[in-house]
Length: 237
Image (cartoon, rainbow, N blue to C red):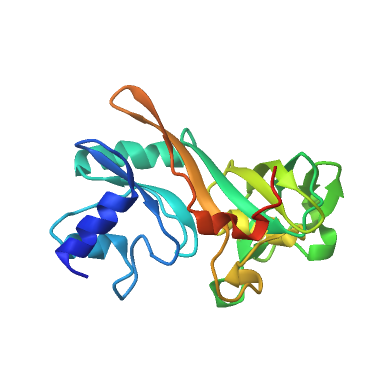
């Protein structure tokens, strides 16, 4: 990728910037870092002469707000905010099928299974659904692997029997948490390749971020592109 390509990408997708930080509205299909090819934002920027330090991650298939430190001096404080869960993160997700309550809480522990795949740390049949909450009994949680308590809250923005549009707030920040939680309660994100989605895109978008910078609370919104809404186009109200 050329310097001009990075300049265009940066100009197109930057949604907040100071001398110390940059928030990009990342398109789907581009990794934040760690890839061995040209779809790695950190590598693309570095090749164009700009050094960025990721404060958190979102998956390659996920679009939306990603926070970078431009000045390494602010990086430790920002990462601590994520670790202490003082950062507020909200995602948009389109799931199928619909039929979800107006609000819900998914409190299911996670573990890592074969081939490094994240899964619920219990058998699917042990998941309990009571009104607007999904849990597993303590005695059903796996004992033979390390487990990670995980909580996801959602509010239904729109829905019918086929799809629902959710605003999702992960109260913990585990790898693949939103994707696994929604799939294991029977409402997988449309297009998610972890759960059978093929082609197209995964309809999960990092929508809003709130964090502290220089004594000020910063709220950033990254609007989803038109392609995100395709599964619900013409049906939402």
